[in-house]
Image (cartoon, rainbow, N blue to C red; front, side):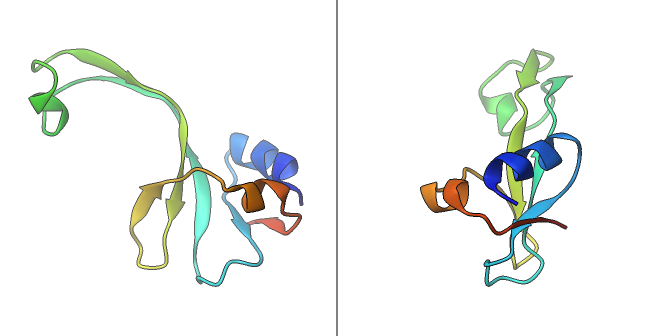
Length: 86
């Protein structure tokens, strides 16, 4: 798939990955937006407890070491044609 098709897939709940990625088990997924009251750090150090904040939807990636990071595609990712649904 191209990146546009992959983005359509991730927007309906699929996990996506590049077939060319070297790391096993890596994939990108959509984190939907949410609204909640602040009750713990690090936000508690920025906002008073109970402040209602909104997290915007964003993409995260599951890394090889099983950690999760926010993810922004590179130009190579956007132009790639080797996207797959996991």
